[in-house]
Image 1 (cartoon, rainbow, N blue to C red):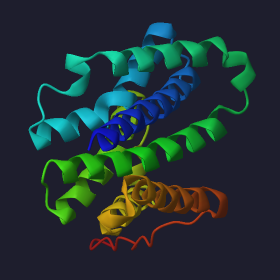
Image 2: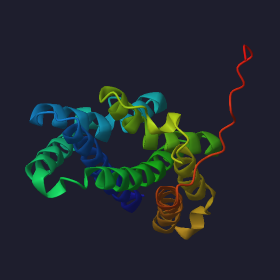
Image 3: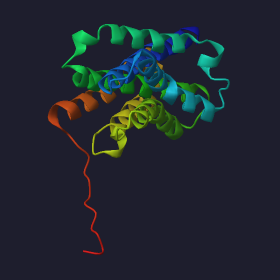
Image 4: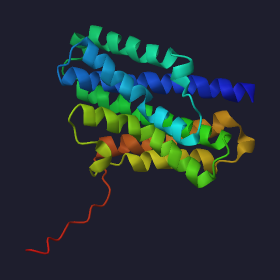
Length: 210
C-alpha cells in the first residue's frame, strides 16, 4: 500500500504539472500577464482534483494541507511564460497534446483514488472522468472558450475509457500495469481523435418551428 500511495502522489504531481502547462499555454494565447497565466494554470491544475476530493469527502483537499501542487502550477506557469518565444506558432499544438496527457493521467488518478476510498466501480469511473475534465472546463470558461466537452470532440469519452480500463483490469496485475493500461487507452483514443479528426455522432436538432 505504501508503494501504491507513492505512485498516486507522483501521478498527481505529473498530472498537475501537465494540466498547468495547458492552462498556461491558453493564458498566453489570450495575451494575459504572468499573474493571469499563473492563475489560469493553477485553476486548471488543481480544479478537477479539488472537486473530486470534496465530493469524495477527502477534506481538506491535498493542496490545502501541502501546497506543493500550487507551487508546481506556478512554477510551470512561469517556465512556460519564460519560454514563450520558443512556443510561438506552436501553442495550440502543445496545448492539445499537454491537455491530452493531463486528461489521461487524471482519469487514472481520479478512478484510483475513488477506488481506494471505497467507491463503487461505476462511480469510480465517473470520478476518473470528472478529475480529467473539470480542470479543463474551468480553464475554458475563465478564458471565454467553449469547453471541449460541449463540442463534438472525443474528450470525455477518452477519459471514461481510460478510467474504465483501469477499474476493469484485475487488481492482481498490480497498480503499475493497471495504470499504464488505463493511461494508454485514454491517451491513444484522444490522440487518434486529434490526428484523424474523430468525432462523436452528433444528432441534428430539428427546430419544430421550421
